[in-house]
Image (cartoon, rainbow, N blue to C red; front, side, top):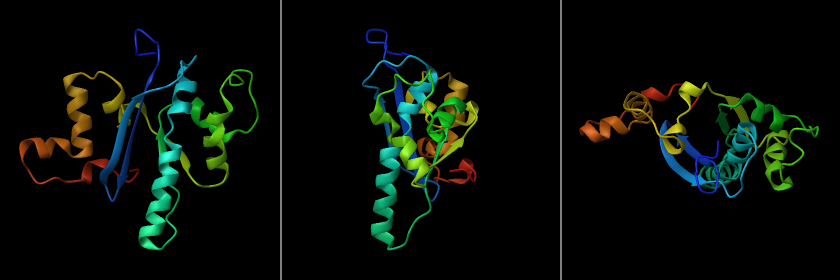
Length: 160
């Protein structure tokens, strides 16, 4: 938490996949200082981007796409987004971040838990060791591109 030594702000990262291929990604410092990892994950959930991509897909295909699944590795953040009750531990979170809660309640996005070891967004938010970096690169198909092989997308699994 608070990876920025000077400002103590956390880094958020998101990757979106369509048909097993990464179509957009982003890494950014959060604009606010957070008080817990749960809050950092809650703020980081890429809800606005997911809703926008779903609308774009609807325009392009003329069909209603299913709700995108946001993979979050913090169970507390998922519970905070699903539960409309104001908790003592979350009352300080600015109201604008509760947009995620509205999107979940309205079925525009689905929140799914992903084990920390499988969190692909770690590529964009954390300094990683060589082994972990290589594992995640294979999962998003980057390793094959570096070696010059044909990219394959089988490494993602059903959840992506």
